[in-house]
Length: 107
Image (cartoon, rainbow, N blue to C red; front, side):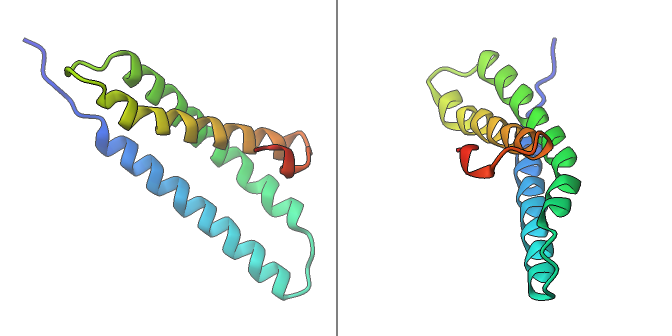
């Protein structure tokens, strides 16, 4: 007999952690802007590694859960497609920062 382990708490923690990291980044950049220090690139580069790891985690876990959905119905599309999309977005954002691309092309 195999025990069921629900990973939804891990996904919700990942989403909340991504929101916290992005809010922290935005507030640090805003405070730096208010103090007339316009070195925004260094703040972005510092945050690119944690956002990249978090994006990779959400992408891999979302894809695995998408393929191994065990309940009947299509709720895996409702739960895990946005997780894969968020993971891809965070990975592309982190990659764009590391490669010094313009962030307007991330979308």
